[in-house]
Image 1: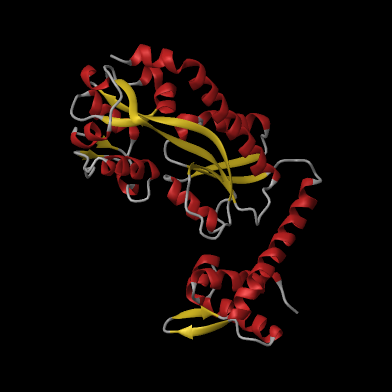
Image 2 (image 1 turned 135 degrees about the horizontal axis):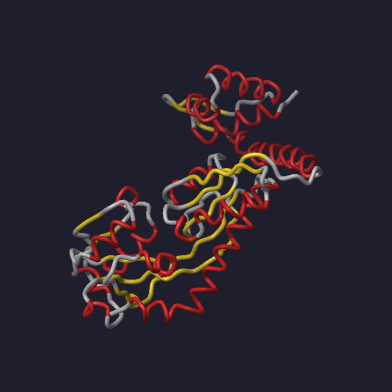
Length: 319
């Protein structure tokens, strides 16, 4: 008899290309995983993998089985959730993925919303960078996440909905540098301090800036690189280098911004979209769905505030 456990071991082996990798991902002993795949092959009377060096190569039968195994696990998960949702009581732990600066967009406000409306839910906000949390999603470590868009999803396994569009602006303590929109040449030739140094290769914002500089024939080389937005803003406020920041973050910081900073749009303007991503192969649990709704509401209120008050914010903080 074929079991869901066999399907799970098979799919994880397919993803990682070895029994060792699958065992590490599942938290099982390697012989246990290989035995489950062997039993599945025995029941199907066909080989699903062939050895190649230290790894495994899927057979045509494995690729033919994959969508059916995914569908079986999805159906089983939905059945369990359907029974649980009948209770109409939101409980359990929600691991919700967030990018590093998400705490500026909702942070403690989201936690307060969840605990106030659903006191029996335990929430974990997980992640540093969108690339990291989307990897967690693909591996099933998270049900849903708020992430920067777009992202590469070669397998077409993610469902994504845009929540907010935020503008990336140029920030400086020098009034002359924020009197008019900043183009690619100025961006590439002025001293810059940029955040997210640990994720610069994967960071979508950094890739946009690099492309902007490249379009004018320059290589973007920041003078200073740091981890946190706050540090970059502090360096900029001292006049040591200029930086870039999301308008939503500046709006949320307001009176907490270092003194003397002004900002202006880039030319052409650069925007970043943030949205909810989740795996369609696993319907969201009621508790996760509630967190997604609250996070979405928070972000959309911020977007409305930016649309209504952006001119006032710039006027009060500019040169």
